[in-house]
Image 1: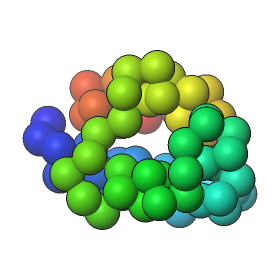
Image 2 (image 1 turned 90 degrees about the vertical axis):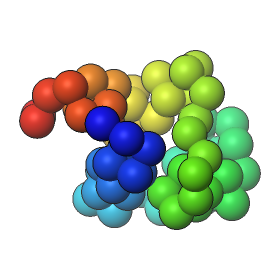
Image 3 (image 1 turned 30 degrees about the vertical axis):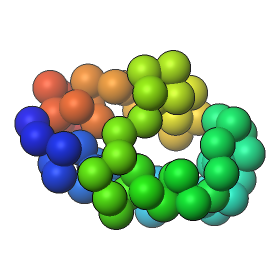
Length: 70
């Protein structure tokens, strides 16, 4: 999967969560602008940040990376 596909999945999971971008940012230790960049620009979270995102959003990194469909 390319970066655009990963961004689409991140965007989907974030939008479908009960959390605001601000809450997500504070929870994973980045700025709200950084969360926005993960969704809209060619910026990919560092591996430790991706792990935090996945835990918070209750999704696997395999799903985000397009390796599974659930």
